[in-house]
Image (cartoon, rainbow, N blue to C red; front, side, top):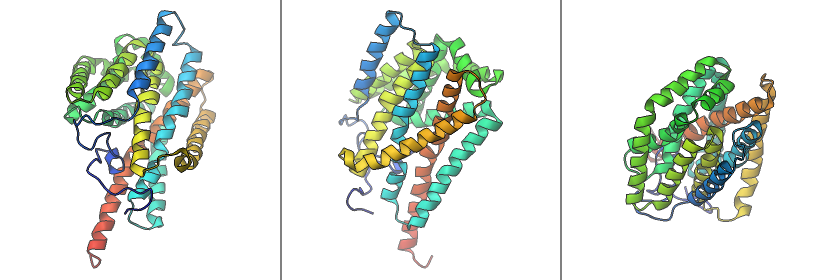
Length: 329
């Protein structure tokens, strides 16, 4: 289905978000221009390392709160174009979109329910989902093992120098001491994931994807050296989100602010409303802990539909095409 602002299907569609999103290059390893992200990541990492060297407190309550707020303000907007991307490929009537929105909300509600019933399981699920999702940042690195290995390396890297802080974060998120078992699991896989992750970075470099390779190396450095939440915020806000947002706009052929602002702003505010609601429902007394819990819960409950709804849309689209080709089926 094509038309103004609605691109036709093309071979650049890839992996999970490939149901609705193009890769930075239609041909892996072609070395074509990549979306923004690496430059932002490298610049911010350099400034942050200078701050760390000067003794700026980067892991206190204030820094943690600011990093969590940054995750919401700069991280959430990249998922606000999901439904527009789905609609751009939809061949069915509006009722199909209503069903998709319902599925989107149901997936989000299910993840929130898991946080309430089994928070440690929700944390483990969130990490697993994040590995799959973040592996999409490394298209062109080669096999899915290399891409997933680099994604998992980013999440396990803080255990190298920040084990205690990561335990505190996980306990704060779940309100369960058993959450330290998740840290134990990350420590176990750390040596392998670092090796695989560096191999993926080298593969990206050899393939001519220098920006991705430098971004991956910068992200890995940030997650090893910096406090965990700050390192994650730099990667998520300055590398992952800009790349995906750029790819979404490219897929939609939205080239100026007026085309996307009216969609991104209201949905970003709605996502912020979800975070505010979760914050209000939190029983933790410490303000930084409440903000941290609300931020990461919001990310997790929106990431699940962000990943799965496009797959469902693609499946429904194929079914619609089949019905059009075989109207008597």
